[in-house]
Amino acid sequence: MFPLREKISPINSLLDLNFCTQNVRSLNIATKNIITEQKLLAITKSGADITFLTDLRLNSLKQITACKDVSKKLYFMGFKFIHNSPTSSRGVGLIIKRSSLEKIVILNTVRDTEGNYLLIDIEHNRERFTLGSVYGANTNEGIHMYDNLQEDILRLKNKKIILEGDWNATWDRWEVQNNID
Image (cartoon, rainbow, N blue to C red; front, side, top):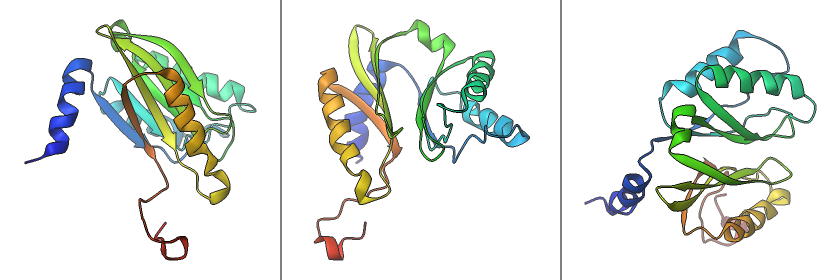
């Protein structure tokens, strides 16, 4: 009845990991406040082995200390935090339960320069996978990120790929002037 489920279940049973995805709408690290703490608790509450995150807005190139603070907090909560959020307007990441790190090996990490996506190349049960968090372009000026994402995925050469995210796009075959996106 649900053909999508049939396609997903072999990957889930092979991976033996639980996934979750969240759009966090900023981690608010520019000023210390309770909202950041509440968001970190909400992110980790699902209990997923791997949680994909979008819209982090960490501004990690300028907010270095605050980013390290978030990473430390997540570490003490039992998670490894990997992110790509160089500006205050974009950003993606993922958290991995530290206990799940015993099941997987991170072989490679790929970040685009604009904070639109983060890919990790992992090995689990002798199989390689690409996991990725994507924050799609909001305007036509940023649409090249989809080509860059495709190139980076192909460069990793994994046949098993799990991508999540806020794609900011809708599939519509109409002409541009009539396209809903």
